[in-house]
Length: 217
Image 1 (cartoon, rainbow, N blue to C red):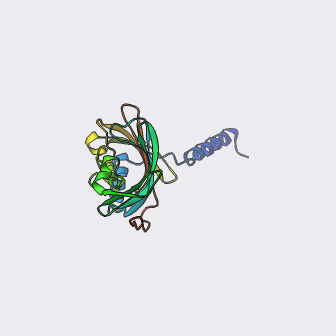
Image 2 (cartoon, rainbow, N blue to C red):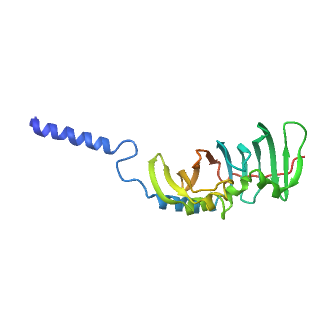
Image 3 (spheres, rainbow, N blue to C red):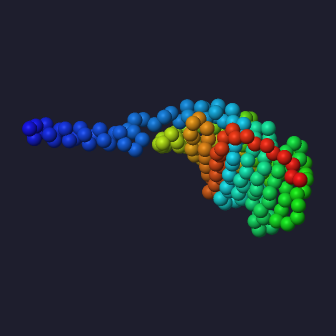
């Protein structure tokens, strides 16, 4: 039989070992800037994605409150959005293909406009644009710090300069506190909190699935 002191020591060691091996480990968290750099590079190779966008609060110059759809790196996209007009939310469907923007309101059929007008509301194709989309936002974020890492998902908090985030989210006129959820060197979720308290959330999924966007019949 073990002496009492040795027995107690063994129990303490077992408890310490158990604590350090549970719930994501007791080691140091991965480096924040390194995680963002790898995710930025990974997003540059994404050919298509499903996206959701949600705006909580007032964002100057942006009438979209939430949107969901699919887009590819060629700048084609289709989906739906809720747009605020005259104090009311109106749901529209849209197809952005070639040089044309097709959209349909609650009544009637599709209307065709120049694709350049999409930017006056919100252009979702900016998400995969390597020069102004999520790849650049991740690359240019500063003061990055990893706050958690569990089950392959790392959460990194950082500040994004206003001129960088404005390419992705119009209406930004100040540096933005941001939080990025990263997995497999790609962005899963970005949360931007403006000084006014307004928040913009972008979530991405279904990377690189075949996507063909055709004009509505």
